[in-house]
Length: 270
Image 1 (cartoon, rainbow, N blue to C red):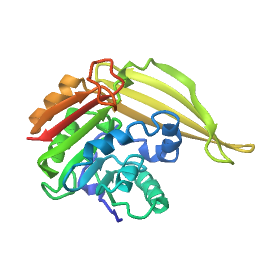
Image 2: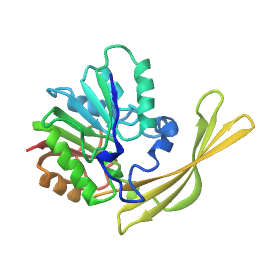
Image 3: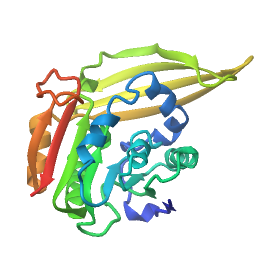
Image 4: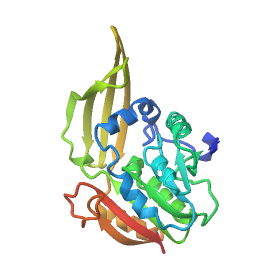
C-alpha cells in the first residue's frame, strides 16, 4: 500500500469557503461520531454492489477508511482518494492494524480532477454524501466528468446522498453527542446548524470539547454541504455521460421516494 503525495497546484482554490474546509480538523472525531450514528450500515451494500466488478474500484473521499478498509479486506482491489492528510493518516494507521491480504492503495488528491489514467477503473463509489461537499455546480460537473473519464466503458458508478441535511432545523449550541473516546478521554459535541435555502447550503458549526481529567480542550470547525434534488443529480449524471440504472431508497435496495432514508443512485458510463 502506498500513500501518494499531491500538490496544491493541482487545483487552485479561489474561494474562501470550499467544501473540503473543516475536514482536517474533523479527522480525530470522525470515527467516534460515526460509530454512534451511521456505523457500518452502508458497508454491506457497497460490498454487494462492487463484488462482481472486473478491475479496480475507486472510493471518492475515502477519509479514515471506514468503507474502503472492509471492502479491501474482502478481496476487492480498492483505491481510496481523499484530500485530507489527517484523514488519510488515520486510514493508514487502521490499515496497518488490518488483517494481511487487503488490497488497498491510498492516494491524496482532488476528486474534481482525478489523477488516474483514462478507463483504469471498473467502478467508482461515492459513499455517505461525499458529493454534497461540492458547493457549486462547476465542482459537481468537474467531478462527474473526471469520474467518467477514469471509468472503463460500462463502468459502474454508485452515489449515496444524505437526504435530510437540508431539512435540519436551525439551532445554536446544542449538545448532540457525548461519551468516552478512550479510557482517558471524554468527548462532548456541541453543534449549531445554519441553512441557506437559496443556495441549498447547510452549515454545521462543530465544537468538540475533549476532557481528560480536569483538563478540557475545545476544537472548533465548520462543515458545509450542498444538496441537489434527485432530478438535478440524475440530470447532471446524464450530461456527464452516464446512464442511470437504479435509484434506491435504502441500503437494502428498496425503491426510492423523496422521504427515503438514503438516496442511492447506481449508474454506468454510457
